[in-house]
Amino acid sequence: MTTTPSATPFANPTIDTLLAHRSIRRFADAPVPDEHVRLAVAAGQQASTSSNVQAYSILRVREAATRERLVELTGGQTKVARCGAFFMVSGDTRRHRLLAARAGVPHRTRLEGFLVAAIDASLFAQNLCVAFESLGYGICYIGGLRNDLPGVRALLNVPHGVYPLFGLCVGVPDETPTPRPRLAPDAVLHEDRFPEDEAILADADAYDERMRAWYAERGLETTWSQRIEKQFSEAHRTEVARFYAEQGAELD
Amino acid sequence: MTTTPSATPFANPTIDTLLAHRSIRRFADAPVPDEHVRLAVAAGQQASTSSNVQAYSILRVREAATRERLVELTGGQTKVARCGAFFMVSGDTRRHRLLAARAGVPHRTRLEGFLVAAIDASLFAQNLCVAFESLGYGICYIGGLRNDLPGVRALLNVPHGVYPLFGLCVGVPDETPTPRPRLAPDAVLHEDRFPEDEAILADADAYDERMRAWYAERGLETTWSQRIEKQFSEAHRTEVARFYAEQGAELD
Image 1 (cartoon, rainbow over the protein chains, first blue to last red):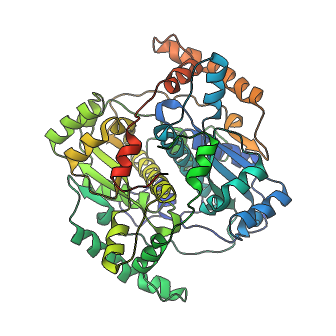
Image 2 (tube, rainbow over the protein chains, first blue to last red):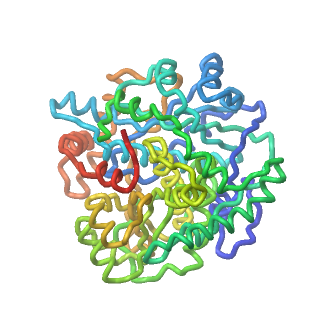
Image 3 (cartoon, each protein chain N blue to C red):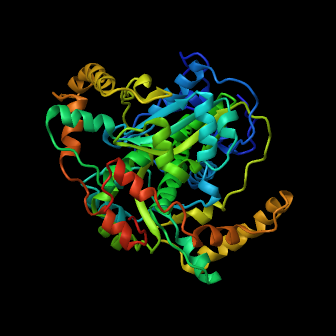
């Protein structure tokens, strides 16, 4: 356990672990033993899953050359090669498809089925990450896996019915960043009705004020709002829909 | 803490909490205090979020009449009205859209942006659930929220840019089910390459054997494979893509 006694009333070691999360981007050259991986995967699997379909899988990538290639495919993220263990998390309907084929019944994945797989995989992955963090490891989600999904498919021979969603770096932290502040809880928790536009923008402005110092400490002259405005003004990973369709999902 | 000392080597209170999860469908008539909700939301928010976009929101529904209507909309799930606290979790790009409009810059949500929102919301929700469970509450995800999304939108005045994903029942458990067994960890964890079709099916067969007794105890003469074959052979919630498109996501 790496957590410290909590200053929050009602808290406990689990909540301390959750509140202590910060993504780790620099890892020590230290392994992640198989028994830790299996325990974290088992803890991940116990997460809720829609009608128990368990529509996900996780691929551990060990081969050094493969991980070096994944550094390129994810936009030069060297931590993909240097972390103690690298994983690819996928929504996975392949088992369901194979069962349907063997039984001679039809099988289709529409947006609903794709969404079930993406949500199932995410709930699994978050439990997995919490388990690793409770064991003292650091983690980082790698959304950059979606930068070049056809490249990932070719490299890892991703079968039909498998939808790679993100990578996960796990390892012993070699840095001690402070957790990044989030929007105020009241900005994301609404009561009985959604707030007016003005309230939504006021929360963003308040968050900008709180985040100003955080960015400044990192040499960045920016605000959260400015970054959000830029992030979504440009088309980003526009090919993912075509890729998932090729993998078997009918998203219309 | 409701967890008991673990029999698993390396485990700790957090992993015990994760492994002890089972969905709760019967709740005691007991409240969930605001301070617990706020703590769980804060713990949820500390989950990873893609480029810190925090593309989610959570609506707590308190009004009794609204919750009774949600029972109907989710397919007659009375627990939606009877649990201590009911929430709707949404992918939410509304804040980003409002910021873009104020700044006079374009904003588009393609499948990538929708997926970021769905994954962000799921990571948040899973942390939230783990926090609640560590406090002694039981939880149940309500995928039935997607049965009639236009009905949900009308009832809760869901704004443009908000994508309701699932409900969450939280409360004091009034039943003590045992955790439902999952596929073997080796069935979902692969090493360096995806297994052959035969191995995937063999894992399903082994799981069917393990689950036979579990279903029999509940008076069900079925297997996991049979349920999966049936589940995906019928078109299911075919309208969700159109609904999310109406909310602002371009999914093609």
